[in-house]
Image 1 (tube, rainbow, N blue to C red):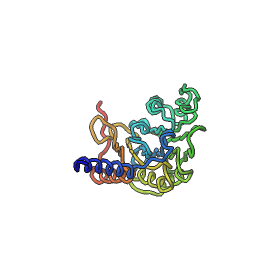
Image 2: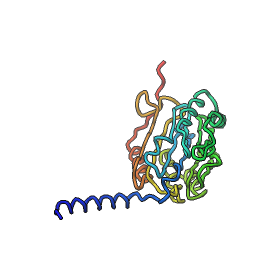
Image 3: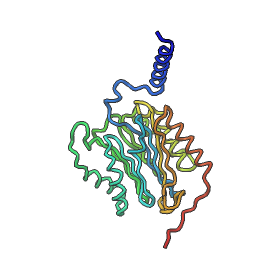
Image 4: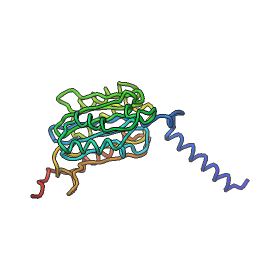
Length: 263
C-alpha cells in the first residue's frame, strides 16, 4: 500500500480516537432532552444581578440565560422553550414581581402535553430587580430534576435536570452562600459546587455567565448595560475555563460607577 495513504489513514484514525477520548458520549445521551444546572443570583451590596449555567450540550448559554438591567434575570431550561426568557423579561419590565411573572409565563404556554415537548417538563427561574426570586420545575422534567433557594439574607436559586441527584443543587446553594467576593466568582463557585456533587450526569461540555445591574447605565460600554457576558461553548472542562475568564476579567476591570442617564 502507498506509504502516504497509510500515513493519512493513521492520522485520521488517531484524530478520531483523540476526539472520542476528549468528549465521550454515553450510549443514551442523544435520547435525553437537554439537561442543565444553573443559578440566578443577586449581590444586594453592589446591585449586580446575574446567572451562570453548565450543561452537556454545545453552547448552552445561547438558550438559557436572559438578563436586562433594571429588570431582572431569567434562566430557562429542561424541554427548553427559549421564548420563556423574552416573555419573562417583558412581564418584569411591566412591573410584575418574580412569582407573578412565573405564573403568567406558564399560563401563556399553549404547547400540548405531548410526551417530548410537554410544558410540564420545563424548568426556569426568575429574579426581579427588587430581589424577589422563584424557581420552577415541571413534574415531567427528566430526573433528577429540582431546585433550591438560598437562605436569607442570600439571594439565589439553583436548579437543574438530568442531574446526579438533589445534592447537586444543595451543593450549589451551599457554595454560593459561603463564598465571598464579587458576584461573578460566587456564581462560578456555585457551578463548581454542583459539579463536585455529580453535576449533569451525562458530563460536561459548555458553560456561560451573564451579569447586569439593578440600575440602568452600569455596563462596561456606553449604551450597553451588560457588565459581563462569558461563554465557553465547547470544552472538556467548561467550568474551569469559565473561572479562568471570570478571574481574568475581574483582575482587569476598573471601578465603573453607574452613569447618569441623559436628560
